[in-house]
Image (tube, rainbow, N blue to C red; front, side):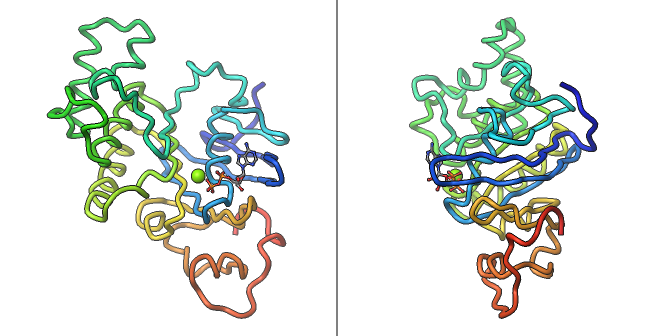
Length: 255
Ligand SMILES: Nc1ncnc2c1ncn2[C@@H]1O[C@H](COP(=O)(O)OP(=O)(O)O)[C@@H](O)[C@H]1O
Ligand SMILES: [Mg+2]
């Protein structure tokens, strides 16, 4: 199914039900080479939304279009997306090298090409010195770089990251922000990352969407995060005191 679209990724009226939780009428589009962040409290539906974007399951209603095709209809190995799990989910019994080499190996790439590819990507992510180590012996920041390398070696057009910085100390976080900027530039991909930390979204993303209890309350340029006309719930989440904010359920789409 191909449809008209404006961006790399189009989310149209996406609705997902899980138990009593509802992710409702989500609409946004992502441009080529954009960094987009979705911020929200724990339990607001960030992971559910990211998984729906990745096409891990069929939405209850609405669509996720990727290059004009419904994500769920694209075979997983042809999706050309990278997904970084919150806990990195590296294979614990494999070295960093083997973790990174996993995707190309599954696709039948030759040993020589894999060696060159892993060496190149490890250099870009500054992990050449830890390739023989197992995940259990790596720091959180190193594990994340390995997970990024494992995703990036497949040259995805879209990288989805679930709370990528929440387990890192402040110094490692800052170096990872720089790494993400470098990845956008060097790999030319678009990135969507979800986080409960609005400061990191503001510093890294081009645009930010705010998710409150499964409702996308609006999307703003990151420099407008604190000055936008938000409703009461978003102002509360951002820690801004204002008496007369509107309820975000009255709002739909882009602010
Ligand atoms: N399989 C499921 N069955 C029932 N409820 C679920 C399921 N998956 C997620 N939920 C609920 O959906 C809500 C959103 O979850 P999640 O997307 O993980 O939030 P976040 O990532 O923002 O912390 C939570 O209340 C969670 O308990
Ligand atoms: Mg989550």
